[in-house]
Amino acid sequence: MANPTDIDIDYVANLARLALTAQEKETFSRQLGDVLRYVEKLGEVDVSQVEPTAHAFPLCNIWADDVPQPGLSVEAALRNAPEQRDNMVVVPIVVE
Amino acid sequence: MADSELIFKPAAELAALLAAKQLSSVELTQALIARTRAVDDRVRAFNSFDEADALAQARASDARRAAGQARGALDGLPVGFKDVIAVAGQPLTCSSRMLANFVSPYDATVTRKLKDAGAIPWGRLNMDEFAMGSSTENSAFHQTANPWDLERVPGGSSGGAAAAVAAGEAPLALGSDTGGSVRQPASFCGVVGLKPTYGLVSRYGLVAFASSLDQIGPLARTVEDVAMLLGAIAGHDPLDSTSYPAPVPDYCAELRVRPGPWKLGVPKEYFGAGLDAEVGGAVQAAIEFYRGTGCEIREVSLPVASSYAVAAYYIIATAEASSNLARYDGVRYGHRAAEATGAVDLYFKSRAEGFGPEVKRRIILGTHMLSSGYYDAYYLRAQKVRTLIRNDFLRAFQEVDALLAPVAPTAAFKIGEKASDPLAMYLSDIYTISLNLAGLPGISIPCGFTRGGLPVGLQIIGQPFQEARLLAIARAYEQGHGWRGRHPTL
Image 1 (cartoon, rainbow over the protein chains, first blue to last red):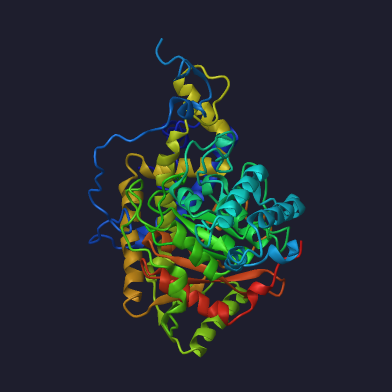
Image 2: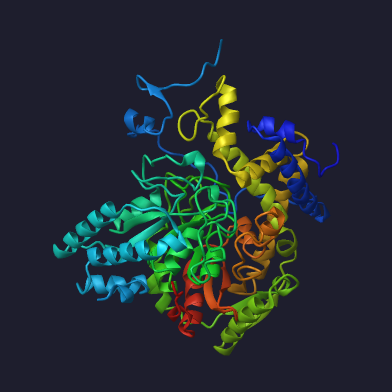
């Protein structure tokens, strides 16, 4: 691991599928470096005997009966689509 | 009745006037529309509102009442919605270019419950983009002003909701609170705001920011009004698998049968460096009020929560946000970049164009936290610290019924003051954030004003699912003070 307060901004932006300008990369790297230096303080806490908390009030195995329910109509589901044709969402070419 | 009398009346009083047929829902709705038209060019609390729809629903409410079929206290009362909660057929923008043209295809569970109770969804209230922020400066659309001082922020992220209630544009509003986003703007704007226990209110139809922290909460002018609105939206919901099957008491009735006194804790770490002297003084005066009414005041310690909550929060919240916001890819809804060379390019460009700087910053940070090689050091460690933070509170609650604390280190700050320093902005949530990590309920109530005339909030932190007691404690203070009689001059 490199310096733990450095973000490999190109690598992370690629994972996040987010195009950043050179200016954004420079600004975010600096600002997030500040935040990472701040959160380093968690290293001071002894968590060796501690279980993680994902939810404050854990609920396990929430089952729903397998009963068909009415869903959105095609019209409603497509209402917010940027581009549509023949009851389908149109997207740019995926496979050549 | 003159509009000027109506616009600052507590919702419970408006409900009584409606029930006594001394006021119609149409008259009330018209008064709020007139008020909003008169002041919102300065306050800018609303992203949008639909006058015709609100009036149509008001007429329907009046017809129900005339036929003897009124549905209860909320029937005919307009409720403002933070623009992050779905109301079918209305815009749902999250104050983001990404969702600028999005229209909700369905109702959130809280919306359905309020409609069933006869309440009128009134407008879409501005917020920090995707609820990420503490000042509403991160809205992609416009800056909401604090009604008490138009050069200052209303707080955030539910800044529009708090400002609308404070400015007399809505008697009731729903916000969402992931790290303080209901309580801090309530404090900055001098209104009452509650974050319920995680799981008490369904998140179905609330656009997700950090799913293990988000809760919808009410904002209003009085504790009783908040109790009324909470009672209408709380309860288990099969559509939200994290909602909790806890009983929902009649919170308004409970207010009257819980006279106190209580054992109240004061976290000693919350009154140290960084707390503004005037804010600290107002909160100390509130503590003395409780002591004077027979409450036992005990100093308690929250060693982990006070030192590490902000750090744990910004790991957990950004990690969950980076995952939740992966859905905005320009394909099925939301902003789509015009010129993409393929599917993956469409994702990169649509997200770059659709998200604002703070959202991008948090997506990058959260993605980093979850990335290979960093997950254990950051996310897993933060979740373990979260356990210790929760234990801090549960230990304190073995001795006391609730805790008294500031809401924010300062009163409302100037627009632009912290905008270029994300870490300083994050640290302004230091007293509120730990409740979200621990899943606890907390309320902000007005407890005075600075010499400059800015409202100060008192935060009362309750035990899990003990909202009835929390509200009763808050009301005891409210009844002993007249802060709610003061209104901003606009």
